[in-house]
Image 1 (cartoon, helix red, strand yellow):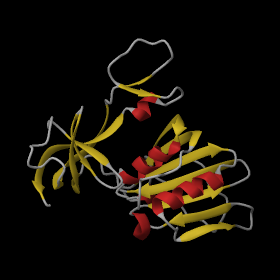
Image 2 (cartoon, rainbow, N blue to C red):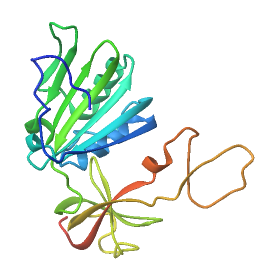
Image 3 (cartoon, rainbow, N blue to C red):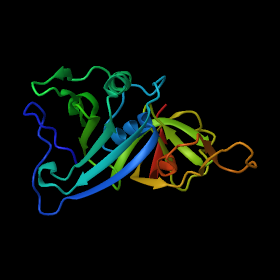
Length: 238
């Protein structure tokens, strides 16, 4: 995890006897990864429509178990080079104006943040001489019982509740009943993440196959991710 060398930043480093860090490298459109990371930690976007693409390569470091996190999880996203303008433009489209707009620090770092009150998680963004980065801290939602409200939609893989910034499948439900299809519903269940969407990279000359084609260079593990609600109960609200 990168330690940002300035006293002006919110301190997101500390000591713990048993922290655990997992690092993965991805490529493709960073935008959906940001939205999913925010949503899976209890945050929300103001809009998910018409967002620009953020085609790049990035490293994601997920830290848990550090004492200063108080049971929360920290996700650090690092992009080599200066992509600050593209990243902050995307954030502004998705989340609106930050609590602290980007400002130059005395050591040359540019830094700003969204507060928990803004979007439901703490989200910092920065740029230094080598990289552009994001640091998110929030409550892990996977494994917790949550209640969501959205539109009931039936898709090829089953029943989905669609919100303004999320699509969540209802585990074990192949299709919504006709009286619920297309209507607003409230669904409660235990939220989990699975990597089982049938994605594949489609290449010229390949024979037709079942599944969801994605562009070459896409991180298939990331693209196969979906959120589900198990042991779910639901009701129509509109």
